[in-house]
Amino acid sequence: MMPGAGHRQGLRGGKTDGAGAIFRTTPEKNSKFQGKRSGRKIRRADFAWWPSSAPAPNIGWNRAVANASFRFEMKLRQGRIFSLLVLGCGLAGASISSYGQTIINTIAGWDGISTVFSFSGDPGVTQTYGETVTVPIGDHFLSSFQFEIEPTLNTSLTIKAYVYAWDDSVPSSPHASGPALYTSVPTTIIGPTSGPLSFQNVTFSPGSLSLSPGQKYVIFASSTGLGGNGTANWGQPNGANPYSGGDFVYINNSTTLDWTTTAWSVTLQSSPVTNDLAFKATFVPEPGTWALLGFGLALLAFASGRQLAIHRRRDC
Image (cartoon, rainbow, N blue to C red):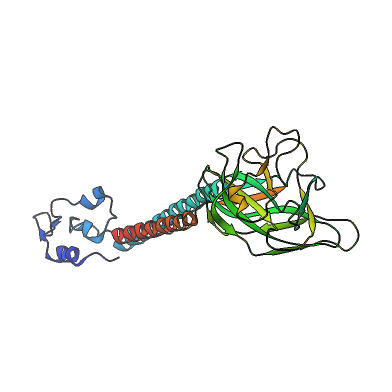
């Protein structure tokens, strides 16, 4: 950038002493090295004190050096800003990967064969199977859950999935509590007409169901009120307790009202057989967490760009 008008006026309107030296009439008259001390680049006006009898300094060369220095410094600053953004994104990514979701998964350790039975659409048989879960402290929004179900030959079974709060304050009468927090659409499971049976991964997606961190809930599926007389086996890991935060629960109910008024059967962790279903539940953080993260990165980019613009104006 060319020197300001005030500096040019100082060159033209300066006074000389007996030795021919030119003195400024600008406010910088008595501080010829003021710019140098304050960190700004040398400009044409800084040579106003040059003796008139001495060869004039190479203003063009100095300007070229200053411009090259400016461009180099801008590249350094841009590099620092870019590095800062990369570091911020890296830290954010690490945070997301460690805090992004919590998955409770007993299917991973299941042999794909062991089962619990018999689940049925017949009111005279058990119509409701489920698993109690303890909601993680950090990620308390239930995104999805799934069970492994194996319908028997030539059967068709219709079920719905539910999420309720779980009340086991009275050990002898554990039961679902309050209204249904989630109810799925009906899902029909059809068994093979011949050949070996096979498990089907039946998944339900509440979306982002907000639950209370550290509290216990029951996720389950039931054929209650949906008709049909098909039967099915459910996958159940064989052996030690795979999930310590909950248990396999079931109830021989007649109506949906029984879920909150009648004691369920619970396969306790002290049971000699496994006490969990083969299931998977995925919990995610509050959706606003992602929005806040994106806003923070955008704000960082804006602040960095603004700082770069300020440096450009100062150095020009």
